[in-house]
Image (cartoon, rainbow, N blue to C red; front, side, top):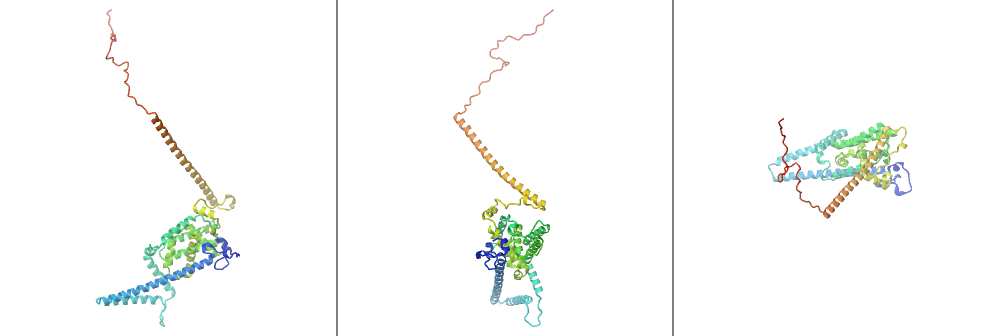
Length: 408
C-alpha cells in the first residue's frame, strides 16, 4: 500500500492487507508487509543484532590475537635464551599497558577507587575513534574485499531512474514554494551529501542528524505544527531521491562497522540513522503499488518515455509564483522543441537515404548505357591552312604592284 493510505490508519476487514505485526495499520509490500512504524522497529532490531554480533566477533578476534601473540612469545623464549629477559620485559610492558587502559575505561572493584565519569569515557572514546579512523580511513572505507562499490552503483542508478517521483506521490508534507521551507530542503540535501566527505563515523552520523533536523523544521513550517514520524520518513525518502548522495551504501556500511555501538543503539543519532537505512531499503524496493500508480505508467516513467503530467495553467491558483508558471511553460516549450527536433532528424535521415538511392540509380543507368553503346575515340584530323599563310608549293600569283614615279 502507499504511504498515504498507511498514514490514514484506516482499519479494513481484509486481514491480508493489514500489517503483519497486527497493529491495525495498512501493510506495505515494499516493507515486507509491515507498516512504516513496525518496519522501523523490525529494522532497528535487526540492525542492533548485527551490531552486537560484529562487536562479539571483534572481541573474539582480539582474544585470539592476544593468545596467538602470547603463544609465539613463549615459543621464542624457549628457543632463544639470549633474548628471554627482553621478551619477558616486553610482555610485561604490554600487559601493563593493556591493564592500564582497561582500568581507565572500566570501573574498579576496589573500595575507595576513583571512578571515571561516563562523560569523560565517552569523550575519550570519541577521540580514540577520531584518531584511528582518520589514519585507517582509506584502508577500511569501501574495501576491495566487499561488494560495497557495486551496491553504491546500483543505488545511484536506481535513484537516477526515479528522478520523476514527485512529493505528492510520496505524500511529503513539505511546500517548497515557501522560501524558508525551500532553504531547509537545500540545507538537508547539502548535509546528506556532505556525509561522504567526513572520515570519522561520528561525524558522518552528525551529518545525518543535521539533515533530519532540517527536515523536521521544514515540515513544522509547512504544517504549522510539530512533525510526526509518519511525516518524517517520506520526506527523508524524497530528500535522498532529490540529492542522490554519493557512495550511500558504503557510508552506511562504514558507520555500521566502525561506529561506537552505543551511538547506534540509543539516542537521536541512532534513530535518524535507522530511518536513513529504512529510506534506502524503501527506494530499492519501490514499485508502482507504493506510489499508487498503474504498472503501465510506472514502467513508462522508469523507461523515460514520458513523465508525470505537469500542472496545467488553468488549474493554477491566482497567488501561484510567476516563476513557477514560467518554468512550466518553458518545460512545455522544450518538450515541443524536442519532438520537432526528433521529427526533423527522422526526415533528414530519410532524405539522406533517398539521395543515396537516387545517386546509385543514376550511376547504374550510366554504366548500362556505356556498356551497351561503347564510345569510339577517332584520331585527330589534319588542320586546314589559313588563308593568309605562305603558299610554298604553287605560288603563281602576280607580283605586287610597286609605286612608280613619272617625270613631269
